[in-house]
Length: 439
Image 1 (spheres, rainbow, N blue to C red):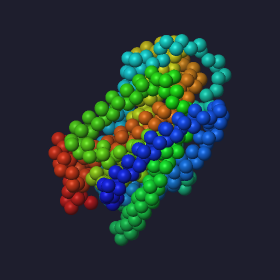
Image 2: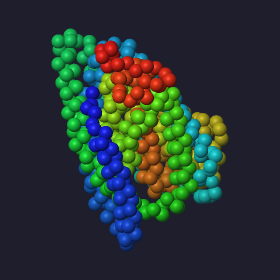
Image 3: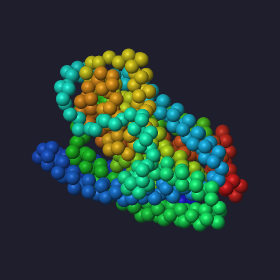
Image 4: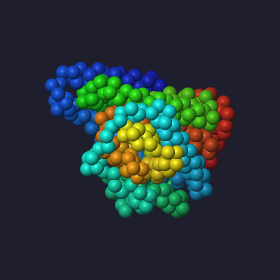
């Protein structure tokens, strides 16, 4: 299990990260005003992205060994394949429900507030290019892509779902062999996980600087005026996210009780990092740590959280539904209830096959809208503000996966006793003390 870092240290990192975010906005706004034009603003922003790119590269180098070590050691410690099946079933049940709720909410707020209505834009030329590769988004290719041809290749490209599949097979194989051979391997992998947690601690110390650089870069290019130009669309999106947060936290409360508040406090730092960098990967290692500090056993965290990164992108799915209807409204195209329900089902599939792709949500929208007679070039309408929207959907993805992992652990009785007495007051399930837990 990850070591519990002092609360004061964690609080300072959260504070410094928040300060970095605010300073980035201020500095970016100043530089945007000083720049002679968009080209110069983009050139200035390029210097800030150096810091952000280095931080994200450092985070990405942690993910593959951390995911492999935690999943394999987790499955090996379960011992019982039925227990793994129960955890997977509970997780997928939560993910499926959250996906339906997120997509439905996106359609609901789009229909209620009509953010694209009144724009009255003419249909773009069919040859208009979005710059996004929207091909190869189908169920068949997604299913075959899940299975790696080489674990080395999967780790080199950070294909989390492929790493997960290999790790599951490896974990089952490890649990099936003689304990004389399995135990040293499990100890080695546990040691590897501990090393990666220490590396994460070191990398996270520069998170405030990376957050500052990320925000300064975005605001230098976009300026604050973009918030006014797309004000209604952005406002409706963040209103939808607020409702989604309330639903997710409410669902978490039903399972975790007052412990939900403690979990939210622990998730502050990874959520701030996710928001400012617009990268779920940047928050992954720290999310693993805080879930274990919360009491979730490593074998559950290591299995459910990586799975959620491919199947439980709540903020992204709400955005995809909202953006698709925004494009339809902007061009005056009416989509009936049947078409919207069909679009929901299509997005349920396409959103699962796109994890790890740059600007994944935009790619899903670009692939989906032509199926319903909408111009794919309509993506150009929202590309200008996508970074601002990406920050919101990314932090929501982190929140949703944190709550999902903790809830599954609670249901399965895979929670260690924690100092927070509020957790013991949860209305459902029970906390299993570490000394009485089954191996």
